[in-house]
Length: 244
Image (cartoon, rainbow, N blue to C red; front, side):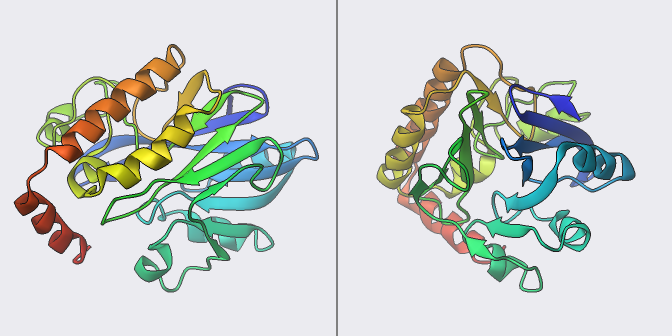
């Protein structure tokens, strides 16, 4: 487990994604009373179990959007007393998965005084849970920002087919399925008001410098893309989202 600031830890692995290799990672927040929050859990290993046991008690597990769910069941089995938090759509996509609370909107001091939470809005496919971890001044996201490089994916050319470039940007799921720019902007403006100096993300290089400026640039390009999407495109991807 790698430290990524005060009381914030990360663990990375590689997964197969449509025949390619993709880096993914999870975040672990430790509270002052040694409770642990796991954000976007990766597949559990004996080493991860030992690290978590050394750190404290796993109390909360967050599946940040409905497609970041593959490893959640393993953690439920290992930590049956932990509360499971999911984004809208997770229960419908995974009806057999235990989900104690579905999160939506904005909550200051979420679960602990050191954590704020908000869900993204305006997307017909999914919402995503974003966190602010105050002690480490870290914005925590899953897919809203990706920062792909040759070192984080063996087939960067594949992702370029979906508009991914070697720089921080919103994921294809956000750019293709967000139909309501105003709702999206309202949520992101709250995130912009948060005090963060680095960005944890599940896919790609972590952002440790100029985090606020990078976040603003990503949001500006993302919202501009949404505003200029045609009604035909919005209608098409709305229908596609119903099949996923």
